[in-house]
Length: 365
Image (cartoon, rainbow, N blue to C red):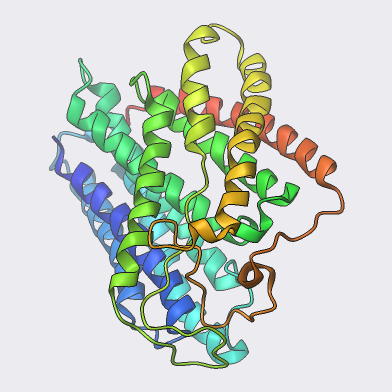
């Protein structure tokens, strides 16, 4: 088992936990010092990826590893492709840190999650995660026989990347948005792309279900774990009484279309990619609508306001008149149009996911 496989897992895990913690921190405490534990965890993930990737590149260039014959050449340096991608991502993450600090000093709190410095950070995180996947999948593809441990690590990292991807569209999938086409369009962009691409990389029969299952388990675990730790707001105005960390909302039911993918995949495996994409796209949206739409009604009810579903956990800055706090759905003036757009987006991202998955299955450097 190559040692850099474990550093890839460690870097993505640090970023995942730190990212979730950071959003919860902003919902609970507010914009605090840059040197919060959450920020440190995020940057630690980048540092691990950059350090391990940099060492791999230098050691391979100097001929001190056995990877020279299965490496790529960039600007005179040699190393695994994943190492170069991870180093670039780590650099982007480190650069985003002072940029983010300056942004807050100049403009105050973020209005949206994807502010310019956060967009740079997100690109860096995406590169670190992609590099980590490449560092795992390349030795897996080079092996004469696929090892169960490498397969399991690939599925874990894939699940972590799905969590990061779903977190990036958080603003579109708040509970009050779940009867709007916008929410399903956003999930149609992220869900098929990540589940199908990683499902293609893995040889496991139920790969997409396991990846989505990791996302569900992680997000549910955080809903149960974070309220156990005391905290209070440090900024105002405070509209909601806060005595503990506020978790993110209950996860989307992407495991339902992921399971449908696994049921259908073997039957259409021999079809051209575009035909499979035409099947996967509507299937994703239809199954997601059939499961998430009525489940959203339940989440708005009093029966979900408990420790298990956590719908009574509200950020300190949430005004009582907002849809989320009133447990009401935001209206959608063009629901049908939004769902049609979601189906089209799902077809496109399904095709792209199949292309990326096939490319990753051939990656050996």
